Image 1: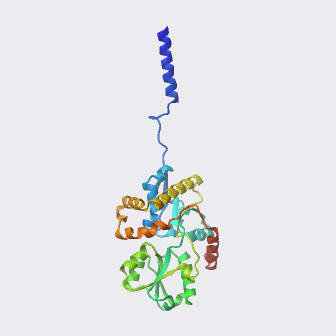
Image 2: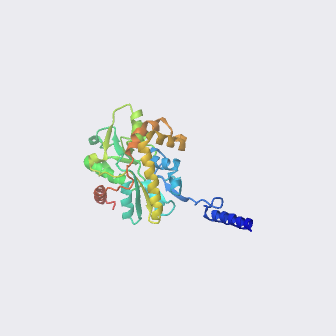
Image 3: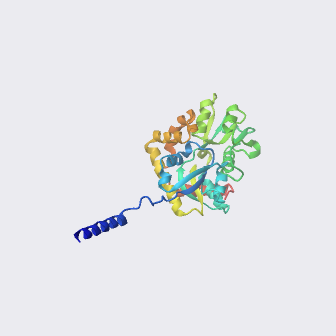
Length: 306
């Protein structure tokens, strides 16, 4: 009788342990949420927060599986987001205001590069551009580039028919270096300007947008359509914030992430420009400068884009 009671007690204890112990073998991992992101251009050091977040597992920690898709400029990426082809897209701050004004709603999710990093370069002083050729790499009419060009020409007392304006998206740098183009818009003062300085043998001029009255704006932001759930947006924000914190704390290790993620990105040029790139990422991806956006809105309204 004593033996039977002892046996029952042991079985009862084992049953209790089985019930209370966490499931292991039968547990299935929660599937990651597939997320599509449209780039505004080819993958480059400006996209380091995404690369670091993917390499270090920050996206996975937030339950996200990321896939990048190419887009021929920030306008196309935004259109893909509006149409539901992708979940998120990379663009610049003015594009959000322009798209919303056109009835194509997109939301600002995260700020990656909070300052204006595009410049205008020219072979001659800007007051000597009459009769010269100006090139841009804009995605299309009605974009920020045309507003900036109009403001630039007004600043130097010229009109569009006083210069030749051409679209040279894939050969802005080479066209300027060859001398066939006299002035260029849409030049990033990180890798493109560095490339020109490296290969240019003659002096040239660099003009900041603010020098001729264009208000500051965030050059790189992440947007999404209204259909993307708020929880997914928050997951994305947390992952990118972790990545940018890592970049600021460990810039060399962050570049190692870029190099291991895409070995073809490990070029001499990218190694040289990385010290120029990593300090410009936003310290807080959630910050939206209301006063800056108000000034920007007024500029875009004056240009007829809103």
